[in-house]
Structure formats: C-alpha cells, structure tokens
Image 1: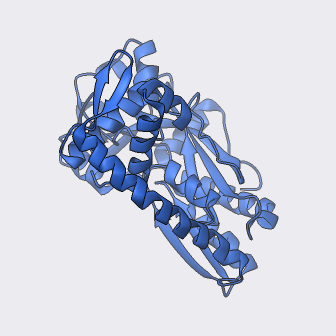
Image 2 (image 1 turned 120 degrees about the horizontal axis):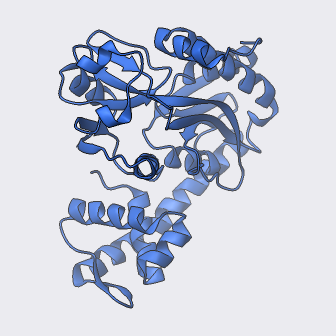
Length: 321
C-alpha cells in the first residue's frame, strides 16, 4: 500500500480522539473498517503506531515520531489545496475541466456532454478505484465533476458543496472463467460460489467489501477472498481460471470470461454523478445527467447478458436513452 495524505489525517484523528470508536465516528467510518485501515497503515510504515488499552489508544514512541511529521506536513498540504481551490475562481483556467471516475462506463458520456457545451475546453481525467477521494477532490475544487458509486445502505456521504445525481442502479453479476462449469448456467446461485477463490478490491473507504460481507452474512453465505486486486488484475486472474469476482451488470464479456447474473439478485450497485454546486458545471446539470444516463444505457445495450436479464425482469431502457 502506498501512503497517502488521507492516511496521515486518519492517524492524526485517531490520536486526537484517543479512541478508534470516536475516531471512526468523526471520520464517518465503521470501527472495524478504521481498525483495518490502521493495520494497513502500520504495515506500510513498518511499525505499530498506537498501543491499545481498554480506555482507548495511546501513540507508541514510533507513533509519536510519525505524528509529529504528519502534523508538520498536513498544514502545508491544506494550504496547497486551498490555492488549488481558489485557482479556478481567479480565472487561471477558465476553459479547463478536470474529471474523475471510478470503474464505470460513464466517463465517455460525461466528456461528450461537456464538449457539447464547451467544444474548445481542455479536459483531463483521473481514474480511481475508491469514490471517496474523488468526491473530496470535487469538494476541494480539484475536480469539477466525478463519476462515483455506492451500495444500498452504504450510500456515499457527499461533502459540503458537492451535489450528486443517481444515474442508474443495477445488480451485481459474477465474472467466471469461460471454461468454468457454472458458466453453462443462465444464472448462478451464491451457494455454488462459496468454495471458489474470489478476487475483490481492498476494503477501502467506499465500504463495498463491507456491504458484500454483511449482505452475504444475512444470507448465510461467505466468500473466500484470496486476491485483493482491481482492474486488469481481476480480469487476468479470472481469465486464467484462478478466481471469480463480482462485476457490474454492464461489464462486457471478453474472451476467456463469462458473466452471469446471480440468483435472487442479492447485491446491487448505484452509479452517481457528482459535481461542485458552485462550480462551472452546476448550470449544465440537466444536460450532463441526460447524456451520462444515455451513456449508461448504451453500455447496457452492449452486454447481451444484461439485456437478457432486463428482459426477464420486464425492464427496459428509458425512452430517451
């Protein structure tokens, strides 16, 4: 794991609160989630930062060293981010739009929408697995808009100044090696997947792994995640027959990989478009939402498996799409 500025903020928050429970509440995380993040930070730094006691946590000698440096660095970082926030207001980049996106088929539609209003604009993009840093960047003026996503009961908390519009909610499917026996089925039952080795993203701030685990626990099911990977690495592991993985319904089957719905549709994912309420794209909201929604349904149409699932549910794309 690479250390990020947000990890330094987490360390400082734990020290200031003196308790993982209180720090989790202030950071809007669960206590188990924060504990897991702290463990990863400590592994990355190579030492224990806090000693645990019944009354809370106390920085170790090593932790004090790290905290002193974190508290020296973060004010400078905050000043830099403030300058970045003020830059667009000062007219430094009147025709520049910085966009972010998680792994979703909507970024092209967002760029198309912006180009229709600002054909000469300079547009840059940034991809990230976790949506939390993206909405924080929108709030801080470092991105004008972002494609993000969340799960039922684990909706993304949008920072002050950030508006969001749901684009679509879809079931999660499972990606299997094409030669897997279950690939011959129209839908796959969760109980038939329990013995598989799973590939899944790391349990970061978006809490998607927590949503999966909690939902499956209620159903009496459990995944054996042995590969914490994202993006191309997931495809490689599935294609080579070493893992299965959840995937978005719009994911297109590629050679070596079969995508199948899950019986009962137990897991869902919501696509969301986020932008700054006072940013240059706020006035374009209806157009952006319409074009991005059309991009979603265009992506859905490319997936024969998803189209078949929609037909069985009696669902169709919106007429405008």
